[in-house]
Amino acid sequence: MQKNPLSFWFGWFALVPAGFFTGLWLLFSMGEVRGGDLSGILHLIPALLIIVLVVAAWKWPRTGGIALLLAGTVILAYLLTSIQNPESRLPGALLTGGPFLLSGVLFLLAGMSKSPVLVRE
Image (cartoon, rainbow, N blue to C red; front, side, top):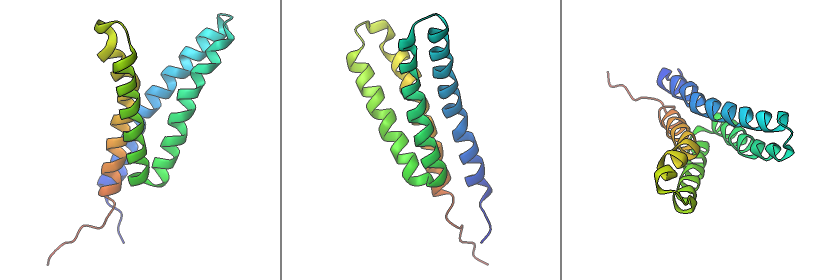
């Protein structure tokens, strides 16, 4: 069975928002730890969460894509309801939940396009 090139590219493009998100949180945690605040290590939790979800999505694109979509939806809903300042609700929620949602959609598309395409001759 020939591999679908669309599935390949969707899978690789799904790593971009996940990598950006993980890099951003690693930067935050290292900056706070370097500044003397050891509570910056807690910033590693979201980075580890997305790494675990992305590894699962890479292995099982459909299931992992759904898991990333659910995680992004939960994070987005939580932040939209918990942030007190109305001006920073949407940008803060999208910056935190958006990479989960975008990676989830791309992994889901990769999983859907993995099935063989039927060609009539």
